[in-house]
Image (cartoon, rainbow, N blue to C red; front, side, top):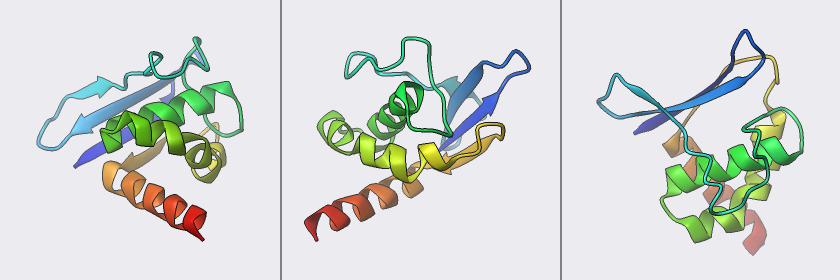
Amino acid sequence: MKTYRGRRLPTGRVRVTVNRRGSEIEAMLAPRFELANHSPGGFEWGYLGSGPSQLALALLADALRDDARALALYQDFKRAFVALLDPSEAWTITDAAIVARCHEIEMERAG
């Protein structure tokens, strides 16, 4: 299992990390600009915009390990999760929770 964490640094910049199962080391989450470059300035959350789009895409690409599926779902995931986060609070989500939310989005789309 992977755990993703986002927090705002005292400087106001944000830091998003991923901790892989069995590791005590947190790595920076790759923004995946090669898939779509919404926000060269980095990640954000708590609203609908370019920074949250980049975060949603990066989370899905890493958790799903399927770039095509991540590209198909990240805008809906942004609305369902990233935009709803409190911009002043730290947050945590697991890859299992991301996969489950993506499944829900796909089921909603299927009707």
